[in-house]
Length: 403
Image (cartoon, rainbow, N blue to C red; front, side):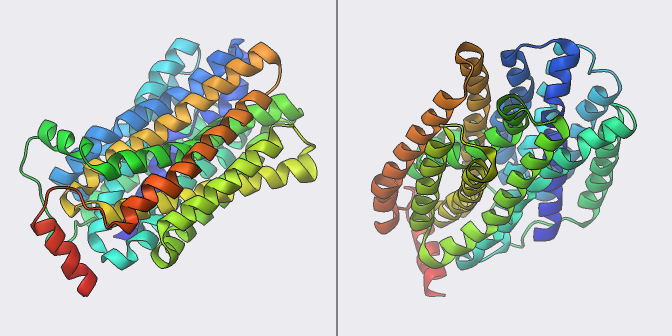
């Protein structure tokens, strides 16, 4: 089930990231401004992020067995639209990108599905492994431009649509929810309201907005940054972005595994400290070899590990019947954290002709998240914070700990 969920996450993220590698091509072909190009790659991110809130709550209710095939099948529609008709104008691309965001909601389906299959002491690693499915963005980065150059604009979209269709059928036939899965009975609105009252929802949202948001921002904007800031070709920039993504993906399960052993607070603190240092160094726009490359790869590793640690924290402090809802909100925060930076970077570059201010802002935000981790989050974990649904949930946690 973990393997099936991870593959589904990767396939849907592959679709979700199809526009990013083509951003520079659309900029040149449609004569887009820096802001318009940033908006183009950011729209799927924000829709996929906000969509995680209802999709996570629906997964709590109906299970991943139902939701994974549905999300995968629905994502086929905007993929085909963009490949066959929706790439000739900015308006058409924005419409297609809006619905392409559905693919990004797959994350909120997979986390509660995987979480229910594993005992508490193994959930950090398990969810980290599932989170490695975000490497689907690397598939897009490595193949999209090459397929367009070798064939046509429609080719990568048609291939992705076919893979989504195969996965939707396989998931419908093979995917199963964990035995004894807790199914909430309250209405959707009431469950979302209860989710927003949990301390872990807001703590994890703040941290994920920085960790995963930073990853998403770089994965969608790095090709533009490298092409504009360092004069790389589109293909070279896309390949380097793929390297960034692959390292972050590899570090996500490691972040979860380390969290199972030394605690998510320590992993988050170390990761955020590395992000601060890397962003400060890169704000001076050093030579790409070796300093710039080291700075970016260090941030990639830290953002991946921090993302894994954040959901180890969610698994530690969230009641079983609310994991989907909390995941939806936290995932939305992470995606929104990735939506704003490309817009800010594009705007600042258009205004000042440099990305230094944007990277300095990243350093400041990461430093604030580090301080929050070492204070509020550490207090919650050390105090054994448990959401106030009381009684049975506390007993369940005690039983799990004793076992």
